[in-house]
Image (tube, rainbow, N blue to C red; front, side, top):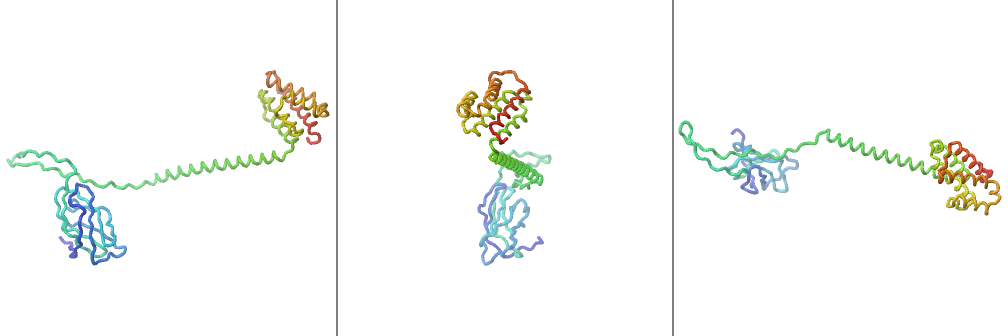
Length: 300
């Protein structure tokens, strides 16, 4: 052997002398009278014959205080006398004390076969096969496309939530603006705005006459509630007329007959399912506006 064998020896020992094929064991070396330099590379090697099967070192060794520990295994069944193990510490090499190992098979023992004669007449027997080497699982790195896929998915999820948040903020802003505007409108302006909105909704054009009658009735009652300060919205049409006749006689003389006619027509549309048309609905809108002009005199 051309390689020089170190003369210094470290006292080392395996944590067990018997193992099965592929089983992990620990080799521990006691350091005496020598300090491992900081950052020094520590590496075990095997100079024995068939070193790949006699003993294999797994991963880098660990240096702790005055101890060096190294994981190892064997894939060759039988007794092993290891007298050419060494460890390199930085630029120095040390011989590891002689080790003895007994490696057993992980396969169930086979029944011995009877000796068979070959063509020359010699007897031969089949020996127990050496198990196929067992290796630790290889750590597979995560491919780049996996990270790209998850990155795209994460970006889409974050973008979706940001989009929904922006939509929610806009809706809140529009709602707050509408509420602020509604608070600033006078009762007369609110009445006129509701009439225009009702006309623009087009219930009368689509034949949804009941929806039209319900909204126009609510608009008129809301106007009386806001201007005259009585709960017209909680009253029937007849009760509103009766209240105006008793409490607001001057106003009732001016709008009473028209108001009674409007309420009567609207109630028939709502409850009696009387046939009507878009032209009649527009006439009711015009008459409601005239009542509003009298009710909010000088404000519309």
